[in-house]
Image 1 (spheres, rainbow, N blue to C red):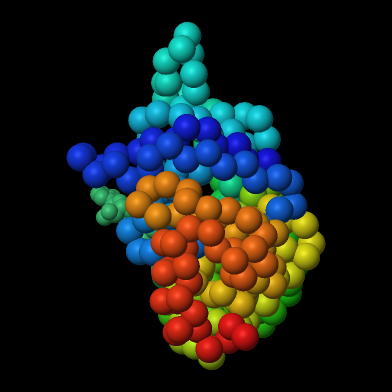
Image 2 (cartoon, rainbow, N blue to C red):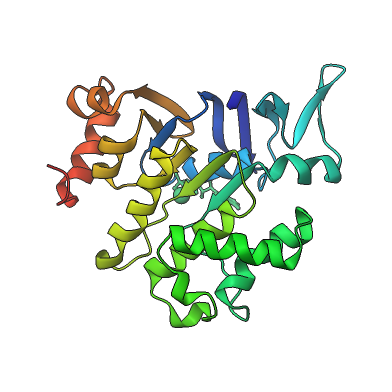
Amino acid sequence: MIRITGLHKSFGNNHVLQGIDLTVHQGEVVVILGPSGSGKSTLLRCINYLETFEQGEIRIEGRPIGRTMVGGRSVEMPQKELNQIRQEVGMVFQSFNLFPHKTVIDNITMAPVTLRGLTHDEANRQALELLRKVGLEEKAYARPASLSGGQKQRVAIARALAMKPKVMLFDEPTSALDPETVGEVLQVMRTLAREGMTMVVVTHEMGFARDVADRVVVMDKGSIIEEGTPDKIFREPSHPRTQMFLHQVLKQDQDFR
Ligand code: ADP
Ligand code: MG
């Protein structure tokens, strides 16, 4: 579903992604762990080409996104083509990014109407269904400001799903939430995973990683230093920096037992 090969990305002199290779299969849930600044967000943002990159290639179901090789050179793809392939990749951010002046349902219907060509009726029907799925049907006509963080994040998930993406990327979706609303968001994500959605999730929720991930990928300083099943990574991490990272995170994670 996703194939990343030889991905390099720099911000000025800061070589943030130093040759990432990663394949994610259909229906797989991959959790990315790693210390702050290791390049996790940048990697996710490259996957739907919110960030450009200098070298390497990312393919979604075989189709390159953002840049493609032409005559041995990496070139930017035309905007129209980019917009199409981008629709296959939904993204949920730490900071929700809902439109504050629109109702919940308008937040969800906007992209399907403008980009997927749904009628307002179709889009509304679909949005209500998605809101039911995330447990927020009764908030359809509320403004984002009246919602809790967990509710906002569930709306953001519904909004991403409205585009019927083949892949969902989550960048620390619960990091900005009050502890009491973290669980409701993770629950929605568990349901999605169970339904077979292909997911790449950056999170420090180790309980979620252990229970839901098919594979855990550990990043450090712009590289993947280790990957394996949650069992392998949590029980017998082979890289010293993974051990150090897990030790630090697990100290703070009361839910991980
Ligand atoms: P993580 O998500 O693992 O914390 P990031 O991908 O956010 O890491 O950041 C990796 C590195 O890239 C950091 O050194 C960060 O300062 C740098 N970086 C991220 N975004 C930008 C940006 N827009 N401009 C310049 N540097 C950036
Ligand atoms: Mg980040």
